[in-house]
Amino acid sequence: MSAPAVPLPLPRLPREHVVERSLWIAVLGLMLVGFAFIFSATGASETARGAAWFDRLAVRQAIAYGLGAGLVVASCLVDYSRLARWSLVAYWVSISLLVCVYLFGVERLGAKRWIALGPVQFQPSEFAKLAFLFAFANFLSRPQGELASRAIFAKALGMAFLPFALVLKQPDLGSALVFMPSAIVMLLVAGVPGRLLGRFLGGATGVVLLVLLQVLFLPPQWRLIKLEEYQRHRLLVYFNMDFADPGASEAQRTAARAEKANKSYNVDQALISVGSGGLWGKGWRQGTQGALGYLPRAVAHNDFIFSVIAEETGFAGCIVVLGLYGAVLFSGIKVAGQARDRLGRILASGVVALLFTHVFVNIGMNIRLMPVTGIPLPLLSAGGTSVVCSLLAIGVLQNIHQNRKNY
Image 1 (cartoon, rainbow, N blue to C red):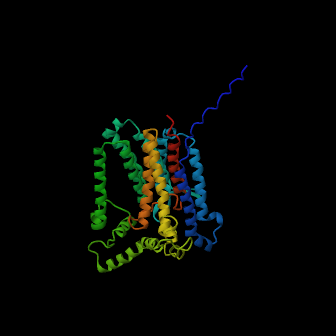
Image 2: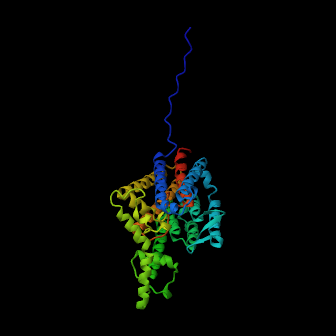
Image 3: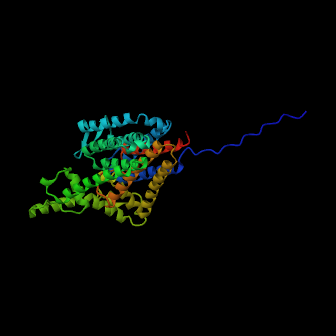
């Protein structure tokens, strides 16, 4: 009698990569760079004033990294399509928080952008960006035939304009402008007819040109669209225009030249920092612009952190940072291309557009290609709310990637 046949083991199926490795390797690299250069930009001044280790900006940035990473893990436990069902609730909560900022927010340097919860302050505009991406992607994921409707298109523009207007009112022009590129990219990916999108872009371009025309050339009494004075000064600095109004006296022009030199100081010092780094930089914590206070300590660790990196690591370090951001953005494009549905594709495209806008505008203003707007550099600029929301946005890409095969 022959022995019973032993069943052969089934062949092991190839295992899908759940984690988008290139994305998270790049994110880890950016977090290490952020911690190191925030410490470099603030270490001397914090040591001089005897700040406790737990009260240092670099330590608080590390805590924000940890909190953001924990929230990413938690959010990835739920399929993004289920999260999108609550997107409209999150959108209106973010709108309510933006209204609360206007009513009783914390004011700094003439702007209300923060809400205080005891010792902790957070910036609702950062949360609003993420809530908007989810709500807008969910709205646009309807059948494509409906997107040809003018009523649907008008509702979509209203969804984008509402947070834009509330953030602009704070005033925070940089964060407000981020909503529009993200919305345009998502409308394109969703398949909105070109005739509707073209009319909107034409109208928006006309408004921008009108604002520039009146800021640069018209006297105050002829200006139809009012900007905050510091916003007007930033545009004048960017275009290297005279601060004096047409018809000003010689004394007023002299005062205007002095004011222009004062308002352009941060940008000039940031450009000097970038240029002085050369090819290989001066070395970590060896930069003189920040250490000696030429690059103002109040902005070196947030708006102008790229200038600190450029001075200390040179052109080579800048290429590494740009390469890390490139890896994040290309991973996001790949995730969008592999998404299982329209919702995932539109949402991933919006996240990529959001991150690209932040990187392009912030680095552009450090090298004087863009006007200063106060927009943070994702994961590198100091700021707990910005870091957490940036990580959550990248976590959305991970969520879409890991659920791409679920039908």
